[in-house]
Image 1 (spheres, rainbow, N blue to C red):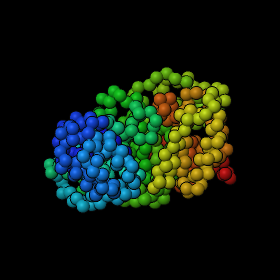
Image 2 (image 1 turned 30 degrees about the horizontal axis):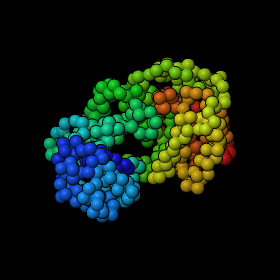
Image 3 (image 1 turned 90 degrees about the horizontal axis):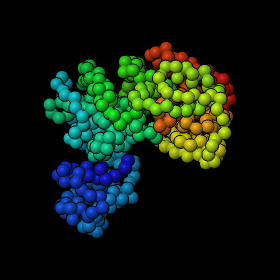
Image 4 (image 1 turned 135 degrees about the vertical axis):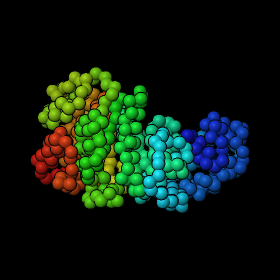
Length: 431
């Protein structure tokens, strides 16, 4: 979790500063010079200590610190596990049982809604959701201000939150690709139309997001509900993430064993571009491309040698899920060295899944796929606009996936699974 300027502004509001004054703060000017009372900065220091485990602020910071100084202070003493524990304790201390059968209204998130959304995340996932941000109301509010998240809520007359859903920037390096998800409904309202209405509101919202290029969703394969919704919204199945999440993330939903997810895409704003793909996946990728309208110069027979000497690689590990996602924005000739290091780290850390996303707009994709397959990776699918250019995802699994537990709704999804399963079974002994 980042203690950036917008998050710190929200924490100042919690500490007693008027919202308009917090929004107007200049990051580099001492708070005292901008009229922030000493009582507010003292309350902010106490809040950071009590809720997030930061040490007591130094007198100089209290006296003359600017917003950016407070951000640096929080980041220097940041500990994710402590932050999560403190955030969960805050949720539990305020936890109440919602009354059933109340009317509700759908709306975009307001500042006062954020604690109710955090409560819902805890009600559904316990403390096991892999992203801390959604347990911390101030951070969730800041993310909505930044359009990194656009949260829809179902608000009861009491102000409590009975349901939520969102578009949000997640794994794609392209900030114009938003994920649809986080559809959560309180158990008292599971038999209402809240989930359906939130999804309809999100769909309408998406067409007004003129800054977005594409939308995607990761539909769990323990049931068919979200897959049916994706199909109705005109999203197309493009990839299958095997064994993505541990059962613990969905134990309240009855999951047993690791849970696979089906990736759906809808591209609203496309641009013509080359698409370099490996010959070994011609059949599967031709099948995927046949179902989604993209303006591509597809090159299965393009050059196999990367243009760059050095790869541009970024990765993120989701500790609870035991998953690492690796984004290769530029495929360089040194990619085998990166993959060797990745394999060693995955083994040392006991990772269950490693996903590698390859940018497909330049030569070298076939080279990269060959290196990955030699190390036991199999295809996951094609991800439109993932990098701005498209992405090709390959995945390596520590254990054989439970293919029988992968429930799929459409024939297209079942065909995609059949392609991926055939490659898994053909691979035989794995590195």
